[in-house]
Amino acid sequence: MSGQLKPILLLLFVGGMLLTITILPVGSWLSVMATWVESHRTFAWIIYIAAYTAASILIIPGTILTLAAGFIFGIPTGIFLVSLGSLTGAASAFIVSRFLARDWVSQRIKSFPSFRVLDKATRHKGFIIVLLARLSPLFPFNLLNYAFGLTAVRFRDYVLASWIGMAPAIVLYVYVGSVAENFSQLTANGIGEGTERNALLITGLVTTLILTVLIARMATRALTQHLKSETARDPINSNINDSGND
Image (cartoon, rainbow, N blue to C red; front, top):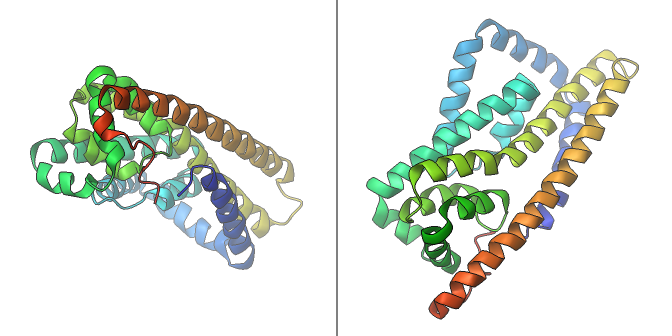
C-alpha cells in the first residue's frame, strides 16, 4: 500500500466511523463501557495491554485497538496504554525472532528484498535505521518487529528507537478514537452540547494528521537515502524499493 494513500484511507475510515456513530446508538454503548472501565480500571488496563501485546506477536494489525484506546480511555491514558502495549509487543517479537524463531522469520521476510539492505544498514547505524523505519510507512509495522530480531541492532537501541518512532502514529490514531468518542457524546446529547470542544478536537486531529504525514514523508526520504548508501556498498541487493507496503 502506498504511503501517500494511507492518509486518504484514514480520512475515509474516520468519515465512515463518524457516520456509523450517528446512525447507531454508540453513545449508549459507550456509557455502559465507560462505567465498566471506571469500575475496573486496573483490570481494563491489564486486559488492553495484554491484548495489544498479543496482537503484535501474532502480526495482527493494531489499528482498531489503537483507535479503541482513544475511544474508551481518552487521549492521555490511551496514548500511555498503546505505547506500553505496542512496545511490549515489539520487544517480545524481537526476542522471539532473535532467539527462538530465526528460521521461521527468515522465511517470512525473504520475499522483501529491502529487508536484506535494512539488515546491513543496522550494522552501521542501528538506532537511526530503526527510528526511521518506525516513522516511515515503507515497511509493514508488525513484520518489522520480527525482521529487526535478525539484524545486528542492539536490543536497547531497538526498544528506544521503536518507542520514539511509534509515537506520532500512536498519537494520531488515539486522537481519532477520542474524536469519535466525543462525537458520539455530541450526537447523544444534542448538537448544541459541546460543539466548541468538538470543533477544537477536530482541528487538533487535522493538525496532528498533517504533522504525522510530514514526519512520515521526511523519514521515508531519509531512510531511502540510507538504504541507497548500503546498496552502493553491496550492489547485489540493489532493489530497495520493493518494500512490504501490502
